[in-house]
Length: 470
Image (cartoon, rainbow, N blue to C red; front, top):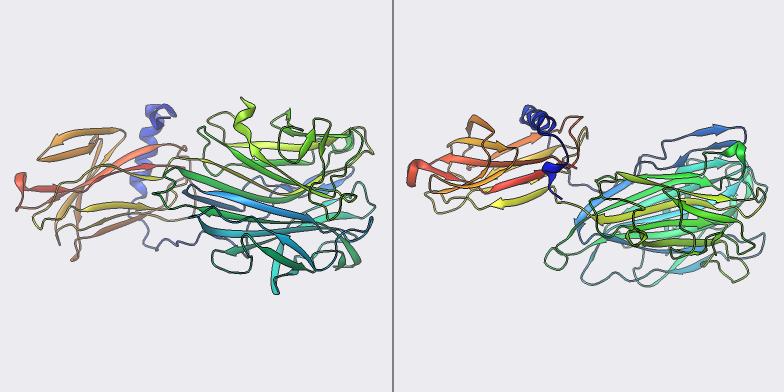
């Protein structure tokens, strides 16, 4: 998909001008930290009705990552120890191994309870003997099936290399099953998931991908009083342009039983079509309970692209829900979800540069996700140019790739920024924020031309860099 097809020329020119205005206004270094642990944004939708409230699920991801071949692996288990008797404490959960030569980006541990009274803001479990503190990422009232006041989910995000979770091996989990929690002398465990985000070296998996993780709490919509609840919206951090869209959501309290509930994505019942869902009208089978009689936890995961027009290119998110009928039948809850799909790299080399008199070709690079209205700082950085040299930044709405002054002019020269000078090391670094209102998939081509009396035509140049807003 070509970015120029997304917006009109007028809108794109306004977006590029906004980008130009933002250049050079900030000098704060960009943090490379991707993982948000303490203080992540919880579910942002609270829905009251005659039956209770839910803090929703999503709609924005609590974590996003872009990387070569990026994806995720999951493992889960019921944590219910009573009603009926089930899991022991501690218990063992075996996670799948990472695909070599992929590397770990972050590990997510999510667990949930049914309880009486308000859930506390944090909860602590033990993973392989290490205390892991999770933050409340969603709650809901009432519990529709078991007689508790409501439910709550907790999330802990572990950075790469934390070494707490054994990838591809057994993990001993303690204090995640039935236990005192808040004012409840015995809250009931529901389920626990370990989800690992990974990526590959670019030489092995050259396709750039987005991974978004969502957390919250939503229980089955059961009757007209709760119509419009139990929704699991997932807003994508990047536009989906097509290709495989790997989707994951967990299910708690998914007992086998008479036809009673369907699972819907964008209005289509996909029960029986995704792993973990067994039939259109009995969508969740509970594959991950501690014993066949329990069936209290499940994972639905699969590629949505085989379902045709369910999620079309250009989509910015999707909406899922579980619905039971009639009221009083089995109830299902969801607390963790994820998507993974191909995405365009934010920064791409477009044309080669022209060598300067010192023999080297100046390098133009970009860092940052370039998201409209985001507080994250982006940078365009020139290195390897002559020291204290006058330079011009060429900015284009499209690519030109035409011979020019012994080199290649990469951008269409729509905007020229003059008066810039390299420092003593032959570098220029320009930090910027992308203003609000710039559409995703807006493309800008940029290139530096540098005055250098020692080369033909008195000019050398950097490579051309293509920037794609997300």
